[in-house]
Image (cartoon, rainbow, N blue to C red; front, side, top):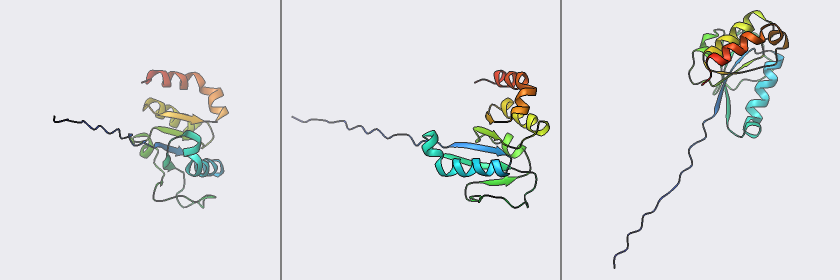
Length: 137
């Protein structure tokens, strides 16, 4: 008798990192960057990469060290908004004007948004909610 055996192997798919674009590179942004880049995997149970940070001034000294092999600084919001590989936007720039536009444009681009901007949400929660609902996947 000849026996035929079929061997199947299950290979777990590589866990795709959560790719974040961040608006704001000040003290709060620096804290968020350090926590997520150092402990993001443990916190979110998947790899985390802050791939781009949009700042007003590229030459301003930062209170945190940027891993240039993984993170790019930019002054152009569209570098984040138009990047299809960025899943999530973190808004830590403060204020209402530009922050509102960044949050709305991010939501309209289908990206998840994280913000602790109470002034923005108090003034524009309905508009942000509508933008999020209109692009819900």
